[in-house]
Image (cartoon, rainbow, N blue to C red; front, top):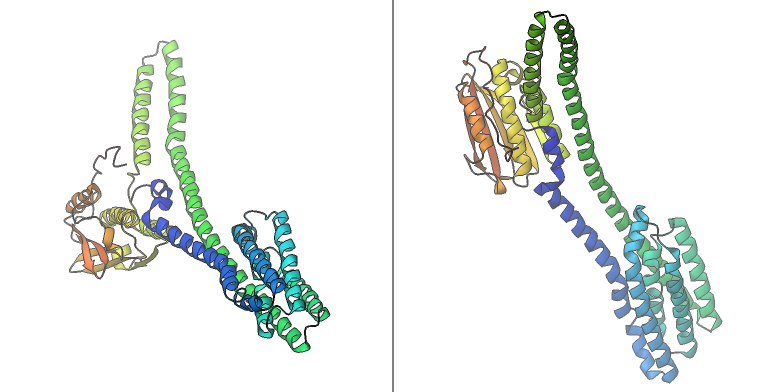
Length: 433
């Protein structure tokens, strides 16, 4: 696996990251569309059907019914405009300008007056009054319930219910109908509360989790940059200090005409070349791979990308008892395999398994994202791994394993010479990096 800086820096660009964000955006859109559609559903059902009775109750009732429907439709439009802003206010990402509630509040007062007037002139049937009361506050309360605390919402709803029932009683509505109107208000207020706020809360939690994953990836990048900076300091700091001291010594010897100045400059040249090679090793990530470290690193990077990762056998004979050369070679396999899991397909789970069989150490990296996995034998990374394992008498296989699984299997015999150094890494072009 290449340096964590490169891998983690591309987490948000990987297919799985975009897929999860797209799913979340779709859920968010579905929730908002549902809340925007609710006022219209109420309008064309409970808000429209009772008004049909006004056609037989004279011109005054017809005018009041038409005005009620028109004002209610405008209220629904305003409610739809305020839903997104109220969501943002609830999440704390953007304050809601309360001046936008002035017109909806005025329209609610107008609708209340029209409803009371319809009841006063006998423009609606008794059962239609309860339906209109159900529809009356829906468009206003859907965004409003997200803007104020629950206690404030309930107090305001109670005040509105008392005022409406009092007005209906003042125009002569019977007690039975008043009770039905009050019950309708209780039902609709609780319906809006229990449907809107839980939806907004769920969306808020999901977006916070998404933001946390992004922050986790950024923190991992920052941590890897700090580690890289420490490595560069460790590599260059001491060598540059030695170069400076030997250069000063060479200058003093040269001023005295001492031939030892040449030896000092030769040593400076040697240290400079060694430093150059060490810097290349750090930048290209070609330091010796350590299997336990690579297993932990792969698990951390995969989980940071939202892929659950299980490591099996890391503490067993295959993980800790293998010769150093074999552990180093398998560490490179873990690096490259984890990189392929991240960059190809859309896996949800990855298993890294270490076992021993027939005198050999077997490393398996298996994930459930075979749909977009690279073809067997494709890619320069797998070819480099085969060369590295072949030097130890091992082999590498990669391909679909059935049931949507993709598996990379590395096998290295334990009879390989224990003192065999890890094969030198092949050169890599800038495009591959």
